[in-house]
Length: 211
Image (tube, rainbow, N blue to C red; front, side, top):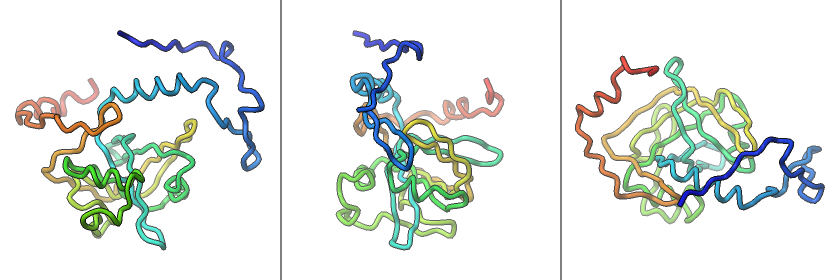
């Protein structure tokens, strides 16, 4: 069975009523979606895209603040930049408001499900078997991650209820650990990472760049 949602022209969309609005900081914001069922189905469709899982970290005067995120991507090779999508209502969004703020993004490894849960708010970081942080010269990252990027906040792009935050990479590293995979709203632990080196070489052939 296929579920298809039709994107209709803007002039055919239902106009939000005043009861849908809330005033905040002098601006009118949508308090709820006019069509919650469309939002649910959109999330289900987007969940068909398998991703890794990252933890974004910012050091504050009160200690480390972290957030689990799977909307992460590499952006540019010159200069080296990465991006992560952050909900506008979160503390992380406020902490990264200023250009130049230092932060890190750690790509979690296959055995770090509990760390993902902790920074997603499903359990306390203090409940983890051991502290998850590792301090490097360039910043604080998640210990034993598959990869990490220490960044300086660069551009931001507001898009609806999220902001795409771009980080200029100051330092990065990787391990030989396999990544933790997220698929259809759950951790996916059955992925076979034993891909022959020759296949990876074909995938990463610089001559194929731009095709």
